[in-house]
Length: 382
Ligand SMILES: C[S@@+](CC[C@H](N)C(=O)[O-])C[C@H]1O[C@@H](n2cnc3c(N)ncnc32)[C@H](O)[C@@H]1O
Image (cartoon, rainbow, N blue to C red; front, side, top):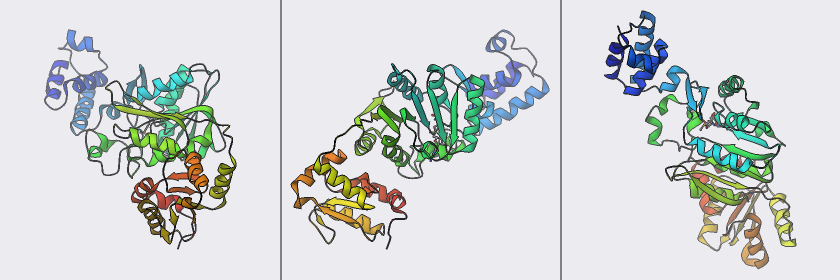
């Protein structure tokens, strides 16, 4: 069989470009060879390899997994089914990260959910003076990323674990992440080769915001003053992401579009040195003094607004036996102070182990996703 015949047969079953690329990979010939010498015979082993690959591609397997590599920002990264195939839109995250790094002499960078390592490695190669740490829950992903860093000559400290767990007590000038943000059950998970990619990389198994909620909520504890958190998200998650950044008391929550004008990345920075007023100190003592504190209108047995009532019902539905409530209607200073404390404009407000969680809408969303129950695990239950 000649190159021309092999290509013609494959084009009946798969996309034209995919057919050409697979034939080049199988035979080692170039695009020019295909055009200039189409009559070249294909060896029997190359022919068999090509036929197998065409069949896999026709069955929907992404080309990157078949050939084991993909190009991103002009570099070739190896990929396996243990990692997400890099997407061009992630370049937006990297470009924004580079903007935030401009002018920093020896920045410390953290990449959460590194996958094949494209973000951490691209940043490390662009900023050789940076100290880059990259985390992933999947040991197989860490091994792919480590291999890519070695091949491409990038100095990255890879650590396996759950989000911030491997960097306990450490602080960074920039935290970047492309977390899983597709909601469980989203029909897209069954389309366009996604069934071949790791579920852990695609979906949080909940409402699509669970990982972002976790990362935004914990970022302040790991950012140096002035340090930015930037993360990629879905086209319709910009507003929710900014709300989560606000709830996490990070400053200037902003959403950045991709080249198509679609919301793609959100971020905010950490500002330290906040001097607490007396009222703020009282609020701080209250929220850190009990595991579950609800600032509300009225009290648990007699809520005086529908939102406060809903918040109480959700806590009870989570099985929390004892929670402290503070009636903001009884103290105007506290009512205003708590809004400032959390940088959140409405009541009720829920705090768990000293951390602001959100108002009744966020509580409801987290309850429906099972996230609130998880946060409350281990806290006095009925
Ligand atoms: C959307 S992929 C991003 C991969 C890569 N950064 C990229 O942009 O191509 C999300 C990554 O997060 C990782 N991940 C999922 N849950 C995690 C967790 N709890 N802790 C750390 N990493 C996690 C997945 O294994 C996956 O590699």
